[in-house]
Image (cartoon, rainbow over all chains, first blue to last red; front, side):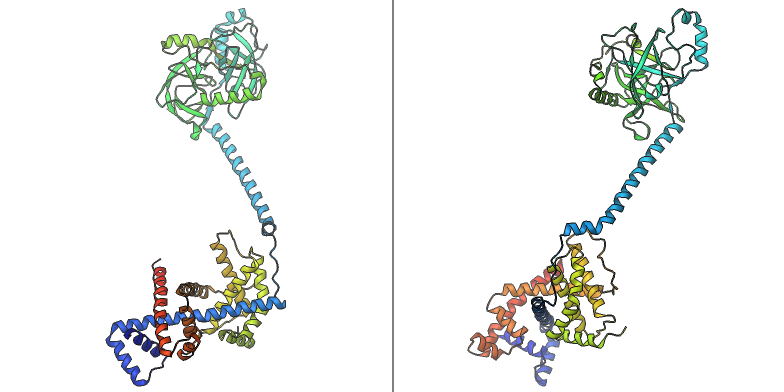
Length: 365
Length: 190
């Protein structure tokens, strides 16, 4: 009962209903007893909350009442909401238009920038390894003049080759793969094997973006290889894996060896890889083999400012390109990549002897 | 800018919860607010909620001693409603760059912060009252909100005398306070 009386006292005190004498006594009690003081403070706060609650409750009910009454009497009209999606679209039509065009322009700018930069980069820093036929060819021609004359050259009469590179068979029926930049600008193509035999070839497929070209030897005296000695490596290659290359930086076939340097090419290009093999103009389009005689790439560029930084299109990339064109072009349907390497475990000299018949110098007139 | 005397009268009426004044303000400004909300992805119900909340802000302002509007009532209500609606849209996580409208605006942040605080307290009290149950709720309501005397309450609720009613009210009050303060503490701890 004491609590009840205390609470009653607090309420009367807060409402100022206490007689003067009692109030003085209560204030004295409050000062001397912190518990009671605490209770007074707490209850003051609570009563404030109650008062406010009451006020808002009343106000809210008045507002609801007024709203209801005014709607009934028609003095405020509740307009039915419009279809929201349509109205949003209408409202933002312009904004969306502007956004779309900005996105479009940005895309074009970026695409343009990237392709411009890529071209710049390849011009400035990368050297494509096709060979310009100049003095060496002339000298070589003089050296082997009798021999050359004794053979009937298949090259166009009175024409000098524009450029040259290397190519190698991907199908024994006479399909060669090389770099697109090797045959760029040419109209007639002659491929020549290490014995100096020349064969006419035609472009079967060119893609300058991926720098892959396929030539088809169209000469009757080309002897079909029933089985190619090498195959294509389908998986990736490991860093440090020993590699060797064959190519025609000169009129002679040239052997070189090195290692896998990096799994990506220039600027992180994943379609190419970096190899540590000496390469010179003329090596472009040449095959890169691992020690088992599997093609792991095609040499295409080297870094100008650095020694021994050569990039090769990965075999994976080439296989993918071939799969795509096989699907798209029915003339390639019979094209079959060599599946197994025949030269695994062989002595390198033996391997080269097997391979060299399948690697050709590509001359573009 | 000096506040229009007619508007001062309206606000004084509002502070006293005067129905006439509230009706006048409602008639003058509700349609403007409704247009604002409807044009910005809101519904008619949203418009009513926002307008009534703005009226509460106005009510609190009208009641305060330092009351000064310093702009047209229309501008003030518009600013409050616009801000409230932006907040509501953000809570609903709807993308909103800005609420459309070219009206003049006045800063209302302080009032809205105070409103937010009081809204929480109001909701806690409402919930505590809901959980209190009958007859306590009616008893508390009659005494604290309708400010009826204990004798009157005793008559209405059928208690034999005012002391019995007082006894009952005391028990109810203790329960209510317990409910309210536990919610209050929890809220402060958050």
